[in-house]
Length: 381
Image (cartoon, rainbow, N blue to C red; front, side):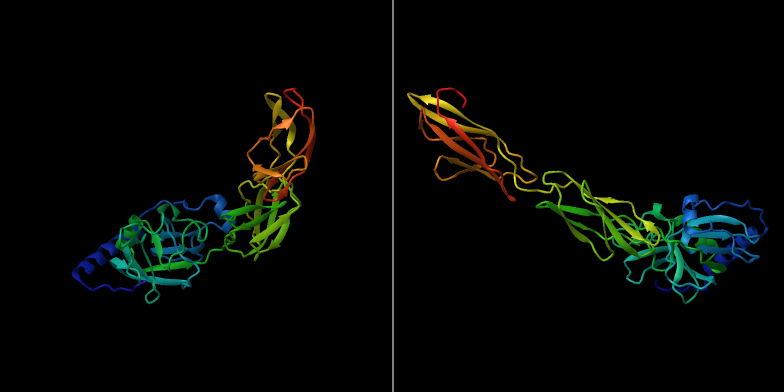
């Protein structure tokens, strides 16, 4: 965070008088206690106690930052919360237990000068810590985060800041106007309990001969290191547990042609993730046997033209690439995998021929289907 400074000008003096008047009002006003609306009960249960007053009486207007809740409370002199501000902070950056606000800059910039920081209030002089509105791109004015993510626990939706507390423009202006000089701020180290890992963002299942090649994107740990993954194939063998450093696995012994899905579950000391599920994949194998092989004929004079006809063979997970057809002792004839008949050369009636049909795919060749067909005048043999 680029450090700026305030200049003792007439405008600054006017602001100090305005700030003093407001603080005096807060000290004497009777303000109803507000609940901490930014922390749902379920979230509080997973993180620790709901934020409240610090353990010691302050006796003056002050700010309380609950780091693992992304909450900044404005508290009056009677330790009553008068405003709850949702922020995006970075509790991984060390802060003192207590300091005071130390000046303001209407428009500040980050150290790259790529982001504009409106309503910057410095906290803890010399520490590079402050509050400001959500950074806006100098290039196009776009915010660098979604305002809906303010108040979400760090590492669970809200992005980590560079050390300052990001907040809405209205809240940043409020701090800037009334609390930017000499107001105590207490950084409360709220307990934090890690959540189970987030599920993997992507699981790939690539069909193999009788199996699958499985890979996945590492799961996000959410505060506790991932210790293992459990991979299951449905339908398939028993689940397999692998080390956290493993992100790929081959599974064999699956039934060719049967669709399966893969589920990957990450584990850590905090629990297990939801299952990340792959798209349906189909392990493949050699094709099955061609079905209903028979002959049909067309007569030209006393000579029969023979059609050898069959129903498609089961592909078993891999497209049929061809059929191998033999007639008698002749060499095999290769026809397309989409074909279901073959027109044979003229054959004399009254004879019997031996035919074979065999389907082929990338995994190999299927069973040979044989048929001895008499060449008669019937339309089907």
